[in-house]
Length: 284
Image (cartoon, helix red, strand yellow):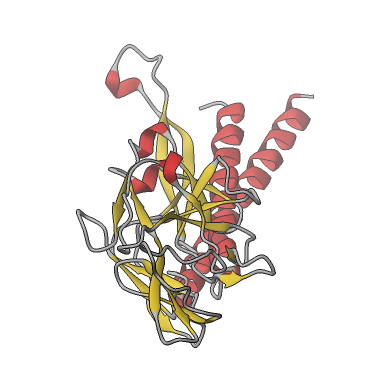
């Protein structure tokens, strides 16, 4: 094996374990981030493919990719905020960064929603929760993305013919089927929206973006929207949040192991450099 091969193998190790250190560090940093999904670095060996004889093929280093476990369920914790929501089971909340709720839509499990000055439900990352407006019977047709709109608690309640307006809004709560129910001074409770859940054949194929949200990709498969507790969708828990899936003990153990592997690969580069220097000096 040539000195250049030794260098390239050690460099591949340094680069691969640097990804591992970055993943573990990100996990630890996001221990308290609502809806955060942990990452894991997966390593694979690199083997030369140009040797005609399989026995002559040798390892050329290691490669690494960081994988996010988007579908992993985090623990659900109760809160005192009526507009906080957690998903218990399969599915993602649909959100938009646009003030009018226009595409592109993103998908998240970060449900720390609060009503802003206009009444829109916005989470800590600035994303607006999307849902389907209900009719006077409290029903909503769950279809495609085109029918979604930002959930606004100040929406005028849908009323039947000759119905009397219910008076000022006094509160909002969200049930397990994703209905956003407004309470009024008269004591009436009226459903304003239905929150759908986004389902994917391969949620691990989603692309991570800022604010603990994900973009749809071809590897995630086609999107399907479903009501909570229907089809494969889980439940929507009001006054609750899904916490980070990071296990601190596991991450610190991974961090120590990865740091040692990184240091050994860096040492291999140093040794190869020293051997090369001595070889050059001897030849001279």
